[in-house]
Each structure stands twice: as C-alpha cells, then as structure tokens.
Image (cartoon, rainbow, N blue to C red; front, side, top):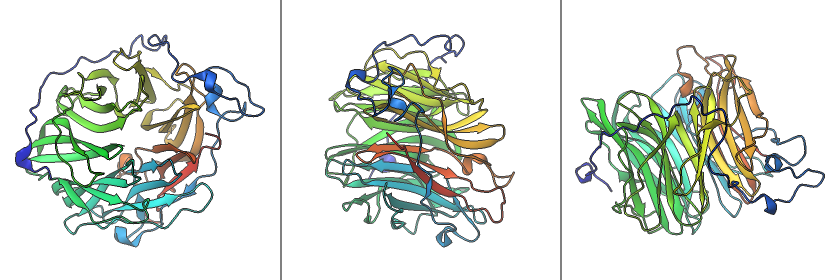
Length: 458
C-alpha cells in the first residue's frame, strides 16, 4: 500500500506553451508513414480496396453496428431509492480468448451519494451475462471510476476509487484493486493500493496497463490545502506478481502542468509504456492534451508534449507509432507520431456533425485500422458516434451508433453526470462499443442504462 507519508513527488510549475489551433486545420503535415500496412489488408468480399478508406467497413456503404444491447439493470435497488442512473463511468476490457467485460457505476437520482460498481460479461452471440458486483468495503460511501485490465495469465484486474463519506463531501478517495482469476465471473475482496485522505490528497481516474505478470497502475494525484487543489501530477505504481501487490518502481511521469486529470496508460507491442492525460496550465485553468512515453528500461518518462487545448485524451501505440485523440470544443482532435518523433498538427476526425460539445473519445485498433467512439451534442441532443481510419489521413463518415437522446433528465443535473466517457475494446471476438444512454427526459420515471453494440465487421 502507498500511504500518505511515502509520497515524494514534487510538483514542477513549469507550464508548457499552448499549441495554437489556428492554421492546423489546413493540412495534415507530419509523419507520412501509414498507421497500418495497407498491403496486408484483404478487401472483404464484394468490397473495394481503397487506400485510406479500406478499414472502415465491410462494404462500400461503410461501417455499421449491431443493435445496441442493454447490459445494466433498470432500476437497481442497490443504488438507493428512486430510479437508477447508470452513469458514465464505463470501462471495457477484451481478452484474446474472446471474453469481454463491461464495468460501470450506478447512481440514484434520489440519493446522489449512493454509487455502486457493477461488472457484467458481454457476448457477441448471447444475452449479457449476470451482473457481477465486486464486494464493496463498508468504508466506501461510493465506488466509482472503474478501470479494467488483463494480465498475461488471464487475470482480470479492476481498479476503482473508494470514496469515503459521499462524493459531495468525501473524507477519502482511496484506490482499490480487485482481481478475478476466472475471467471476471467472480472477484476477490478488494485490496487498498493507495490511501488518499481528503485533508491532504485527492486521487482520481485510475488507469491500468498490463504485460505478462507486470501491471502498472497510474492515477491523477492532487494536493489539497483546506479542501482546495494546490497542485497535481500523474503517479504510478507497479506490480510484478500479477496484480497481487504494488509498489513504486522509481519511474515517474514528468510534472509539466500545474494540475492533471484523466490519465490513460497503455503498453505497446515492444513493451514500452505510453501515457496521455489532460494537463491544466493553472489550477482551474486551460486544459491541454499531453503525452509522454517511456522506453523499456528507462528511468523516467520523456518530457511531456503538449498536443493542444482539450481534455480526456485517449491513445494507441504500436511498436513504432503513437496516436492521441482528445475532446476539444465540438471536435475530436487527433495527432500522431513515430515513437520518439514530433507529433503531427492536430486535426479533427470529423467536421460534418456540427457538434457543440463532445465527450470522450475512446480508441481501439484492429488489423483494419483505428476505431474512434465519442458522444456528440448536436442541436441540443446527444448521440453516440463512430468513425475509423486506416491511414490517419482519411476518416469514414461518422456513424450514429445510438441516439439522439437528451443529455439530462433534469435541468439541474450536470449532463456530465449523465453522460461521459464511452469505451471501445477490440479482441478476438471483434470490436465492442459501450456507453451510458440517458434514456428519456422524465426525471421521475427515467432510468438511464449502459448499452453495448458490436461493430458489425471490425
């Protein structure tokens, strides 16, 4: 366990200059290497092999999704009185064996402090499996922000924030870890990996990356003074025993911003770590998408690169290329680079929707290319949207996977508490999308839920 007195990371207040968006929408200069080897792509029967568009679907009509399937229970008695709000804390994981798990948090409209964690297996050919709710310690007033990973031995690891007290008045924000050795059918008792007493720290947005028996856990760690954030950074712990125990390994993400949020940690095929996160220029200031990489055996991550204004980045990496996408106003921006090289100027993956706001994005990749999922607000309603690319120069026309739907059942509710980060996962069974769908606009009868949908031909 990492206790409060073991924290030694000091904040550097060096703030990276913002990347101006002006002029970045004219062309896509930067690395010319294609994200994937298009020569290895085999056109689907009846399809046309067209460089730049071939990964986006099975036919000339482009990508499509199967009908969304509801995986959450509506309503959930364990979430408190009143209708359940299946919140946006959605996480997905897929294994090479074809198993897929979706995790989410259910809150009650009538009891905002009640938040419970749920996990369910998802199959492409059968109804969603029974909801598997990991045991919640009595000290957790709310269990939120799940993150999922799978080790080389097939162990499913699940991290979550244990909020002491309530989300509105937390006394602590500890990080718990659960393990499942039966593919997610059952989870053992939680272990407290990081202690974050509210008088000193706030921990948020855990993220997991696993390779073999090694599991890395990263999170946004903020210093609090009288309940107010004074500094923040991304911290990381490492397990070398399949997620049983965690400890610092001496490697650290650079302190390049005054505060941070929503880190995303991944491995590439060569065994290198990559992290993207939102960096704030000042406490409560402008948010920027940031990236840093860690070559195998290196002591520290490389200096953080500021990719442009925005929030909630996600990233993909191969042995020789990195892609980061993030939300910026009404657009999902994308930038990519050869490992260790300069990133391309950020460009939107779509400009046709006319969205006024976006949430997400989520990324995954298959042999056909890169897949992107996000939530877009268009003319006052939200929808779940998908696009894909094989060369990062041409993106498929956006596909509405679900919606449009209202983003809030009550005008007093923050839409971010009804919607939020969608999720994508690719495995041997294909590409799966997950999101929280608000359902109806009636604040009394509405019970929003979590849905999944299969990409028809990933």
